[in-house]
Image 1 (tube, rainbow, N blue to C red):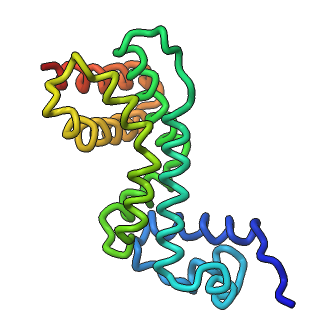
Image 2 (cartoon, rainbow, N blue to C red; image 1 turned 60 degrees about the vertical axis):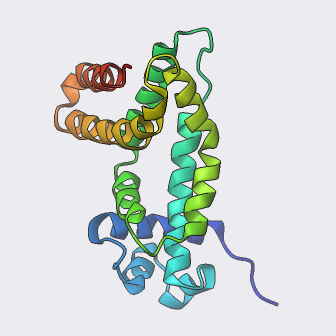
Length: 189
């Protein structure tokens, strides 16, 4: 009878994969990932039958964590701008707290090794977060531009803001506010 798989080893493999994908891209070797996780390469393939399975699972795990962070409850009585600012700050906080995952996610998003199925699962999972942001922008942004503002501008400005806060943590509040103000004013109809 086969031994049950260890969640601890699985998480160690995903953590090591995140480190190597963040620094080397998706071409990082499974041997290096396994060694960093403290297991044999054969054990890696017991948990993830192929390298692509490992990369797709890493993509899903990171996106799930980010989405859960963005969906945390916020005061619904606040103005749309204040609700969006709360989401913005969660996005910045997540990026600062998960620097390796953020870098790995950047690599995974442009990789052809991440399947359409994984991308579609993430897109479906993010539907509620996206709806929340769309509701905050309704009446503020031109309706035909909202998708562009969310898909491109919001995340790119957040990434720039995270990098700026990392470089100058003593100016975190001012940088966060400036980044959000650029997004809010730039998305105005």
